[in-house]
Length: 404
Image (spheres, rainbow, N blue to C red):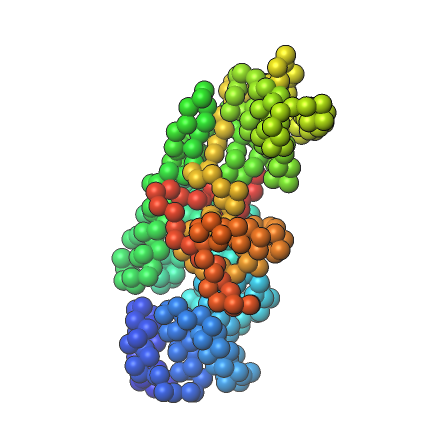
């Protein structure tokens, strides 16, 4: 490896893409193409970065498997940064195997971390946790130690294990100081802010107040019956019932939870669930059907009792009922939760992350764009959606996570 390539690689490792490009901008040999691709990725030109990395991989060919594998890992990292989540996990795994066989422990670990970060984005936390547990961060460079700790914090935060998340972020901050890379430091600071800003609102006894993630964790351990409007489920200490695919039932459950221990009139339930102006015979019949369905869904957690003027929620084991509401009420709050990371997402990546159809996602994005909450960049397959992170709160609870 010649001196210019070595100097450019060191500049990239220190987070100085312009310094790297000054040395190799006019070169087209495979090592220079690979470094140029990484530099363009650091500068935010992901399309150009992927093209350069693919040219470099073809240039290395089968005669230099390690260099080719490094290009595959770099391209996967660019795709992750561009929120293109459909890339081939098999190709990344094959590259990781080659790197481990040739003793390149750092880049093999980077491939595993990319897999973990993708799994976290799409809500497959159990698999992400198993993959992360197989990695020993001891002896890795400080930059990779930062990534390890941020992955640990991300999984812990979504599982509401906030003490674990705080410890991981603190370790990431120490590793970021040793790494001395501004972009990593900024990423760690963003993760730290998530733990100190309001994450949700709790509605109980007619009062509404903001909660930090630690307070949400405490609420989940309190034994209360929680109607969770962040993840569209009803849970107590023993079980969780998802109503994400039953929006009418969840609307009824939320109305009953907000009124507990009082009842809710039939007129109000019709207005909230069916947008009807008054409970005529047709709406009353429909309401009886939906309440019957809600009783069946919640039978392990609570009763739905009929009263003279409407219905009331009666928990079976829990001592109280509370409603956990998003920090901002929006029909497309989960989409905003993904976009709040500041990255540009494609509609297909958002659909994959949130487990919905792409056409449904496109309608949600169009509604948000019409309201001025998101904006589109590019056209056709290159179109990406972005938004500024909403000020003053975190959207962690809106992101994919298992029920238990």
